[in-house]
Length: 319
Image (cartoon, rainbow, N blue to C red; front, side, top):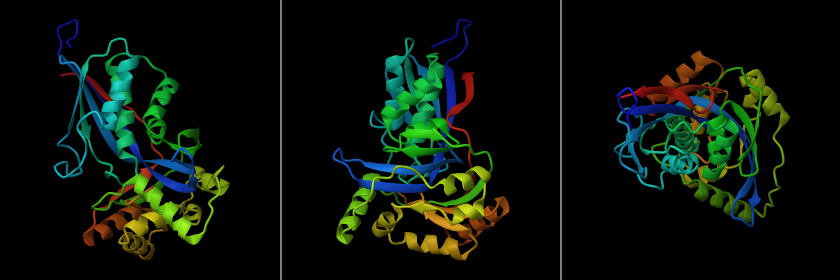
């Protein structure tokens, strides 16, 4: 695909953020096999990138960038039509009049199967990149409809910032949040299957004779703390009902959670279905100290902050 002036092949790069669930309530298993949730999502400054490059060959191909901060040689990421970014590009091609063949190069930074929505961020970035590459001209609302077809976390990766998620997490209401919150992410060297964690929660509840209630809203105090960037206030309100299921499947997470609580973190929580642990810090300096201390312990850690914007174009060039 060349420009009218004889230029090179067009390539659009987009990025989208990973997320932390600062609050996650989970309802009982529904007849459709899903669980209703009430969650507060926070987009944080750990981004996935997708470069969409026009190709003369039909179809969609995908590869992992050597610039990934994760060890791409060891990642168990499908490089076929089951990849969420490929599915996003295919969906965009269906609604684009000028779709071409395209190659997607993904730069991985968000932990894989880590409870932070890395695959969903890939999908959101792919939607935005292909929309620009093919001149589809879709509105953000139209992109959000496509995102919802791809998975519950994809609309939030598109939106970014902070939001309340209801239903299966796809019914989003943006939350006003402009003040900074600082975190340290402690990824595990293994992943956890989200469906497996939900099944373990169901098993634990059944064993205890607990009947969960359908969550209908989130704690107003959590939204107030996020809005104000009140890390101390938020530290007393963090909740994740999937955490005990994640810890049941991966007992070693207790060590990381306990370590954070005893080394200056205001609070420690498993992010989403895990196994990434998010440590809430008082400020950027405290986050840096926590990350450094975790590094001395031999653990991989990264300081991040939120809220940050959702999926957006980084560059649009001719190669």
